[in-house]
Length: 314
Image 1 (cartoon, rainbow, N blue to C red):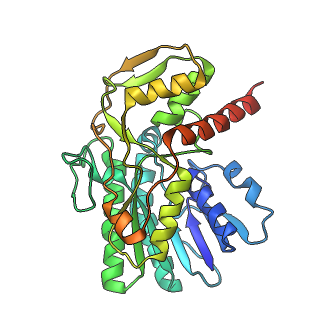
Image 2: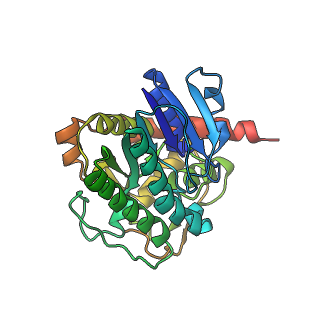
């Protein structure tokens, strides 16, 4: 099997490259390194079945030779990133999806789109099932990410229905683990980084908004099962264990043994009050559910961050 992974040097993309190599696939990693990092895949470069290509997938993609699968993971994913790169985010969701679907169609390859729980916006239904159409502000600052992914889903389904491309769509909920960037703007890296360096831990709003956190190995297991399935409509993959942001911050502080205070800042515009997947469908059609507890996943991620900080110390 040979796969092309767009955004393959990102947090999730690099873990996916690793997983497919472990399964003896050939892997072509495409990334323009705007938010990804070549350090995420440096350990894979000597692998005889791995190849990295510096590529902006918002431009035409040419891949010589056959391909069995195209996995489209390219996109800024943390709020500071897509607010910093709003046009690039919209382009990779629109043009990048168009180009990667065109590649899959030309190669007669299976296609998997990495979509997001952000398609549900600030939901009025919780937990969120795939049948919920969402509550999104298309012209708010977060709209650049939300709408790029909603458009990408619509385009993927159009290619499936009109061109017969064998497509999959995974709606990814909050995921964490090694290779997240330190202090990348998402809750877990922010909290861990701040606790480790002794800064006050920043909580937005009153901290009563909820999230659910899925460890990266669980997410990848779900994605691989979806890839092997015959399901074309969107499928939620995430951990349904809901936790408030404030409680999460307190857990991180306790894990690190930090004495730093928790400080409260205004809630960003359109920040979701609840985010929790309904994984009934994934359980039914994929026989999948998460296995790694929050305690275990946090411990693994903490050890990675601690090591990273030690390496970057002068």
